[in-house]
Length: 124
Image 1 (spheres, helix red, strand yellow):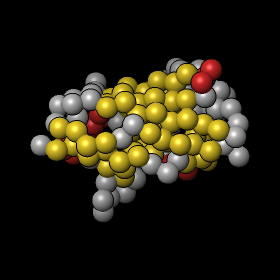
Image 2 (cartoon, one colour):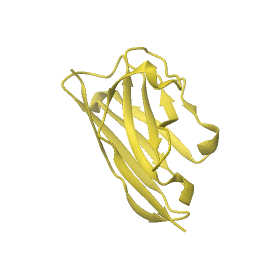
Image 3 (cartoon, one colour):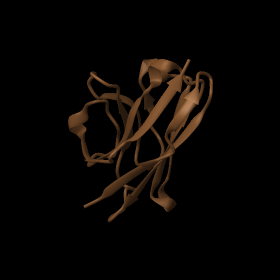
Image 4 (cartoon, one colour):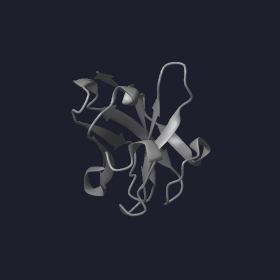
């Protein structure tokens, strides 16, 4: 069973950047789509970005388009999430997710493995 572990969250100011990492263990993710979701207090977990098994077909939610970039390094079994121009409304717990499919989608049901999350807090 693949296990996912996120890191890189923290407290930053509006306009700052962060880079999140998601390291997989217990198996390879090189044939699997990966994604980042986020959940703010009192809100539903929402899709933010996804990437295909070979680094292609990256998709982003409209709210982060042009600011956040998802990438992966299959040799390191790791997925990254560069968060730029952060806004207070980006404050949430960010979760890494892995799918049994090769291509990403924005439906939570598409994803089979989840990390514990890393907190991102953006102050104004």
